[in-house]
Amino acid sequence: MLNIDLNIDLIIAKILDKAEGFSVSSESSGSCGENLTWIFDESTGELVISGEGPMTNYGYGSSPFYESSIKSVVIEDGVTTIGNGAFASCYSLTSVTIPDSV
Image (tube, rainbow, N blue to C red):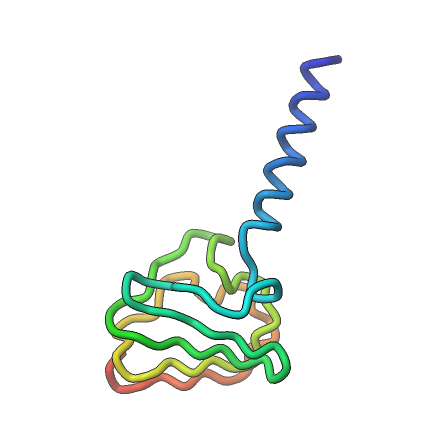
């Protein structure tokens, strides 16, 4: 029985760690590449990504934007790639502006 309780505690800790680790709904800015930053305006649902270079590639569910409430994304000039899985499960996303640098 003790072993089961410890496993349940570990599972709960992992879930809380994932939930508290990061999400656009709880943060307003961060990084998404070595030289890229993002700013999220919760009032408009707009995410702006700026800087120079490639965006980080993300595994399933590991993107800071995963299942977020982002409605639009503006990628500024200087960003060279959009990371794999960056906007996975962003069901509210309806508009993406991509510059020629990508």
